[in-house]
Length: 318
Ligand SMILES: [Zn+2]
Image (cartoon, rainbow, N blue to C red; front, side):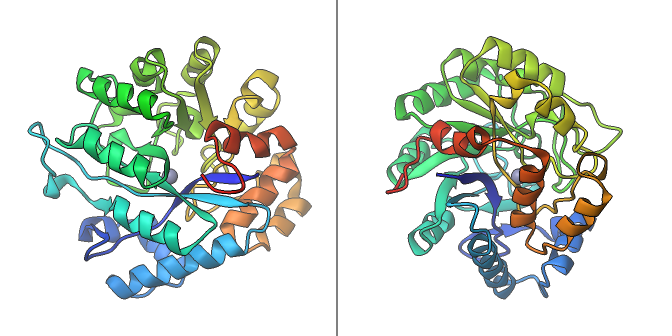
């Protein structure tokens, strides 16, 4: 079974969550909306994005299942939602509903560990079929090495749920604290036995940012419960890491497939050659283009099948 472990959906306003005006007006969001042919910024836009997601997954026959990610907000020290600092919020219930409607989708829950009801929400999501928990600490505003996260880690181990945590840079979303990008902050989770997937393998998303790939590799050597995903590695700032991953059998053996749709995928021209790069650009479905790029780069069958194993997914359900 082949999965894409890292796929986004959007909520604009209403019961499914919201995207702030400031976030909607950022350049990356305007570009994505334009490229996906979205107009407006209301619930109708949300339906269009949902339809696009369904069409995209259906148009990627190489993938059996896509893990669609909710996105929790920022929480203050008393564990309450901090609306002013939350620019993107996609409820777990929305993704649960999508997974009920679309058999190729699986539930990637998102729970800020600082929320008052974090463990109760984790248990609720596990019961609703969550296959992983997604975090983006630099945007959601918490330090994964904070002691307040420890009970959450113990609950993840008890419920046998992996943690997909963003590591490295991020330019598409409004960030609160870039210091939380370092994968080494996930050590307390690893020490407690949580299966952690470091999204983007700690890579930078812009040339002037810090890159944590070496720290990620050092952690891989120390913790066998750590993996990395290849989400958004087909972006120009990150793609040089393909070389490092592919030439190192040890690192290769610990990465799983993710696209980060609707982030665009570009083929690395130096590695695939200019002709193949042009051909790959003809694939307009970015989720599928990302698969074709990674096939062309030479990721082996074990790579494609590893995600389902790490997430313990089977063809008959979760
Ligand atoms: Zn992502």
